[in-house]
Image 1 (cartoon, rainbow, N blue to C red):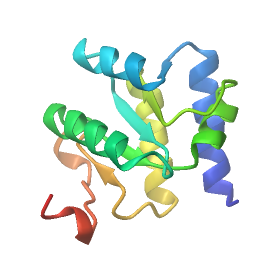
Image 2: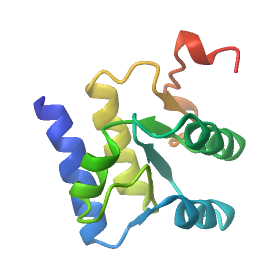
Image 3: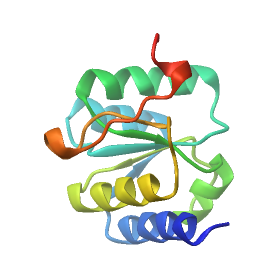
Length: 130
């Protein structure tokens, strides 16, 4: 595991301790509907249906979505059972995690726009036509 990868999990853990994380599919959908979410982390081993649902929500609301880690690791980092999806509800934590994922080489895994026009939006070749 790279140092950048550890930083992402460290910041996610800090966000959880600060009460700035919502986890689990139903809770994240509720937070998305209330416009509280600043970014979403989606487990790489989440089901295709879960990925599709959350990508649609995030694209519609222009919220960055990052496919990162496994359900088991995401759950472990926030001190819970495995989680397929985690929402960050604080803009500063969301921005830091997004920046760390950019440095970690998550090319093609990030959708949405967090910081306005200066944020680079990355879309993988497989995602362009979806």
